Image (cartoon, rainbow, N blue to C red; front, side, top):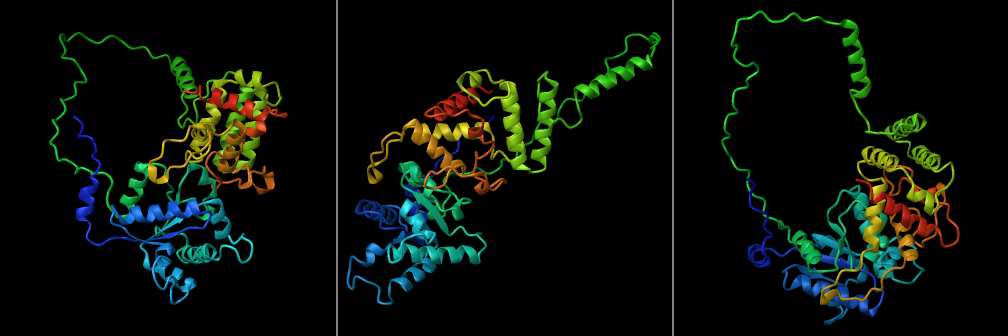
Length: 401
């Protein structure tokens, strides 16, 4: 019997049990009046009904003397120290100012806050749960500063995502974890290795053929190695050897060499040519599955064909309906826009969507999820064809079990 399903704790119960409100400061940039209103709406919602003591600069400007007596620079520093958590509202403008790339004299507030936040993270060697990056749309995920890549990022697109953030800010569990039950298990039946003897007849003689036993043992060892790596059922001996070489490179964390070896395997399966639509549809699923398995296995599930395919599917999904507080109409992405977005997310392109040369790629486990293998290097390309070929490849990968 299984335990009853996990229950979400009701918001009312949380509010009544919380005695000291959590202090939260919101760091953001003045992108537009609409953006400022959305940040204000977020702050108001955190304060009521969620009971989180939230502060932003707009509250100071709303009442006399309309500016902090100690100056904005010291006010920002003290607010960040005062807060238990600091929400970082990430946008393209905020990221630019956070990194100090803004033009002189523009956006001094968010630039100054970014400096203070980076210093806090530096002092704590990035080991801090104080700073929480949030975005109002999944399209802004590419604008989250790289220093927050290891943090949970909250996409405030609906009521569910906002609730998850609020539970964390209130330091309350979002689920009720049941206690481990103490149960006495029935003793298993006594094993019966031999059936009762019905007669005392002398057992038949056994003749051992030593040569046959040695042969069968050799066959078994060949078929079932003691430490199997990947179940590759491919008859082509050269291809199997190349897969073993790929595994050795991945074991040794030689990402760049492994990426080149993977491309060579794909080209060999396609008559030593880059992939076009026809070749993609005929790619061996056994080969694709083996490549994906190796990349996943030796990179903690961070790289692989299925990882890229999942990211691609997520980008192409239509925007979910947003609740009124954060309502914003978003036009669906074209395949070309989705392709550029994928390149930014997996680290093939820069923030301005320019294709990065090999010298600027991170050939290590620190690269973004889905960065390797670089399937874009498998494609024949051509004007308007690269995206179509990639779509065909992702459709082929989706056929993997």
